[in-house]
Structures are given as C-alpha cells and as structure tokens.
Image (cartoon, rainbow, N blue to C red; front, side):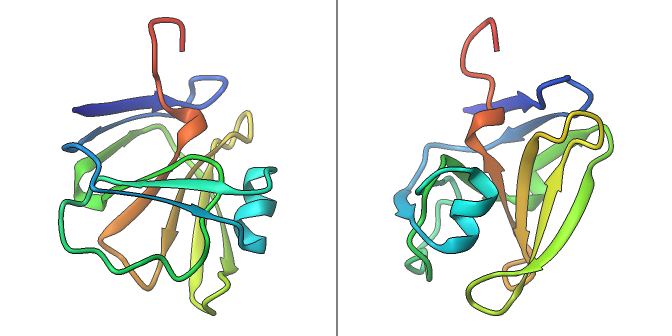
Length: 125
C-alpha cells in the first residue's frame, strides 16, 4: 500500500512503501494542537511491530512509517523543538508554501510521521 503525497504547491512530494496500518490513536497534547492547528491529531502506524503505546494523546491525521521506507523529493525546511516528553522533535515543512509535512522524534530515529493532510487520497489531490 504505497502512500504518496505532496505539499500545497507541489514543490515537495514523497512516497512511502508501507503495509496496512497496525495502530490507530489520538493525541491532544499541546505540541500536536499547535503544529496541526486542530484540537487533536489522529495517529496511524504502519510499522508492523509490537508498538509501545504513544506517550502523548494524539490529534490531526499522522501516519507513522519506517524512515527507510520514505523517499522525499524536494528540500524541506526544518524546525527543531522539544516535545512534551522533553525529547527533540524535528518538524519538516515545504520551504515554499509552508505546508507541514513530516515530524521526526529524535528518541525514535527509525520512524517518521507523515502529516495526513499531505496524503494523496484521490486523483485530484
């Protein structure tokens, strides 16, 4: 089930070769609210392994995939901040249109979270 997507201006696109999701959760932490502009974030994991429960309550659609399965075309702008756990989170966005695209927690370097709003879900996306 390859996932594809892009930012608003299409300067950055990606493809992730992943299998079916194995975890769905929601987060309401301050960081997820502020970065998503929503009151919550939905997390879908496609890691296919025994996962730990999320340490925060999740909120906007996020798909977590193995970092090695994500191919990014185009450069991204990165903002570094501390997550609610105290670990650094790298937030990647398009340098042209500013669309948020991916989050990486340095505490789990083999995983990357794709922002659901950037997913291509139909022929017009």
